[in-house]
Length: 175
Length: 298
Image 1 (cartoon, each protein chain N blue to C red):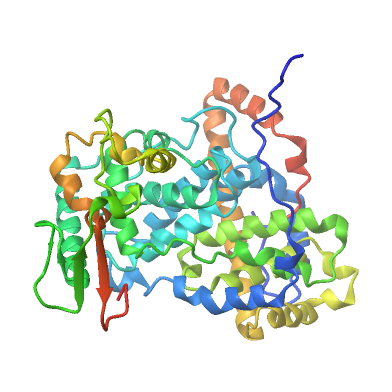
Image 2 (tube, rainbow over the protein chains, first blue to last red):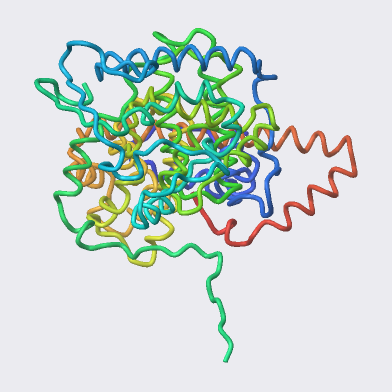
């Protein structure tokens, strides 16, 4: 231990040459540097990095926290966009005026979201079908969406922007 | 005639673009916007009750290990730490949810930076299945909301090429210098003390520490002690004194990390002496260390 005393210096050079010799044998066992120098363990998941750090997670509490946070987020968004996302209609008055558009007039990206094997409504035209295929489904939409239908409705705020055009009169968007 | 598919698993990379790296406006823009992505406050004092600095280091070390094991791009880890710090600066969080947050931040950073991002399932396995993929995806939304969807944060890694390019460095040492700078940047990201520093300062300090550590300054007058610091300070418009302090701080963290390593090694050796079978395993492990790793002199 004693061969490696940190000396405060402005030139740095001496200090580093001091440690250089013994560095390599030590580096591999340092939690951070060792990781950086080994360049990772070959193979799949489940090397030494696989571990639970702070004990078991209370899944119910996590779910409660999540629901509360998303509700707060939604209320915040409702105020900001002057739109009741739960009832799916605009608030009366306010800075932002909402105009209803027929679904055919907006890109398929903004059409109602269909999940999993539910057949896509026909008649949108071949062009929009192509577009729809190009839009990658996020995993959360495919997985367990049926189970969490109610919650999903709350979380995907973008689902509610479809078929509408907003007219901003005085507010800066996103504020 | 047969058709072969020659696509392999190697990652295809764009060449360094001289139009971007040579244009001073790019560096100036990075310097202008970097402050926007700093955490809003020193959250251990004003926001968090349950979480303490050593827990941040624990989760950071774990995240770094996952990123290394999965061979993520270099900037994924510092970017994930930026998300983590920004989230913790605005949201009181329970200790038992800190690893979930770390996983979510890696998930997001990897999606932003990589062509083949980490999957939710993989990340959950790395938590030893203490969290579920569904939870990871739900909390992804929470984190995104708290970060206001501003994910393209400036990281210290964004500055490396800009700085290195403007220094009189030997061409044959550039790769080694980059490797060392990236190591120092990752090391800084594990330390909360650096979380409030602008990324440009961490990058500049890391380059300085790398050059001194590799003793490249012994051959070129322009890279001697104060000359180097002044040169570096000018490139990123950093104050000389602040930069000096930052570089010294980086070197101190490096020393501490090495000391910690030595302690762990010592502990390991003691354990090995008590268990001869472990010793044999360990010897085997060390001999399989790639030789190029030994060539790195920090």
